[in-house]
Image 1 (tube, rainbow, N blue to C red):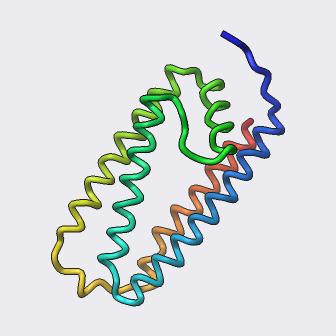
Image 2: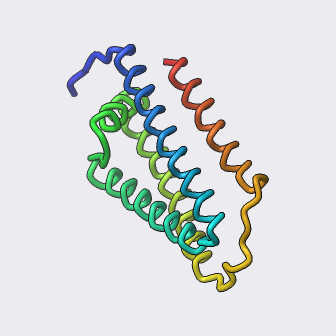
Length: 149
């Protein structure tokens, strides 16, 4: 087994880039969420979320099966570092847990598509608070993980 020396500052920089990318995705998702719900297109929103969750599910299973990652160069480098830091066995266990949770979510959103009454879905600001809370939690968690390196 070949040992590689990881430059922690480089890993921190890559994780910060990943955090910025994640925030841009969250911002785009939130704007799309508000737009679709304000225009009465809840079915389209649930459908998009369903498709994205199934994409993430297949991506994770692909990564588990082949060991290769779908994503940017930054994502691949951070994943390599995580594998190195956690060890293959522990990393694989975490990926399996992640795959199970996202698979359950994918099935849940797919079932939600078959609920026939999307006409009465309204958007109030209070409905956006859970999304904002998840966004803040994501940022806090990533910042803590970056500072722990």
